Image 1 (cartoon, rainbow, N blue to C red):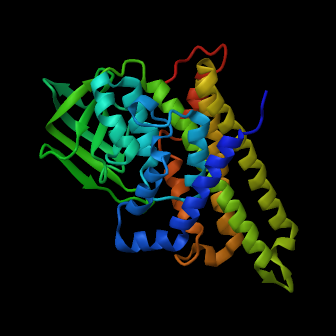
Image 2: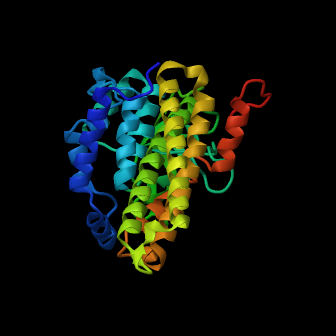
Length: 363
């Protein structure tokens, strides 16, 4: 059994980190917030040019046909940079929903556009307070009616894959008068969310039967990779500050309490990384193990990123809470990722239900 990434995967990660370091520094993130931008369009085009958007899209539809671990390497790099792009919405969720549940015509039309960056997708699954994956939106005669909220990156998306009543999905083009997009207040200013109102909007039904669990398990693994990358960035940011900051005539990092904080974050991050790698392996090689592996990866990812973001703030002290410092980018993203795709309780239930001998059933 190989416990390390392949040379090709390591090279893929280096390329992604290099691109993001050049194009998405912290000053760039501040400028996006100050300008009220929805996303970093220039970075998105660069990701498309490098082929990253088509990483998990089948080769016959214009992608690279890579696996879950390869995609995870890219997600980890995006998390480390706190990138302001709709990669999770469009590629991890949207493109994968079409691949799993779309007709051959839908795949042929949309997957090449998503892989090239010509189009952007999002998954509309929530309907406000209540079940995470609600099915109150209805479709009749090819017309969609109802509301989905919140929907990530819906302001820049061209299509939405909508979870509908009775199970399954519907594909909706958002640029039509029967679809109203309302931007919501978001704690994470670099990952906007919207309310989508459908008033008889034209929609194409998708198969989707039995595909939702597979889709969200795979997405949970990728969310874990994103959390690991972000937690690792917090750890290194806190370490660098602790080594530079002088207090009582010695570096802040020389105090045992600070060492303990950084050690706790390092241990939690490595555990989460191991679970994410196992989830990626299960998605590719052992589908029967994926439900438990995905839930474990998601839970440890939430925990490690929360710990890392909070301890990063604590190590920085008062300056860490200012806009000029960089800690808040990760704290905001952590709070958003903690509830995206379901909160800790939701995934704890899924883990218990997936364990051998459980009498439960995954949501």
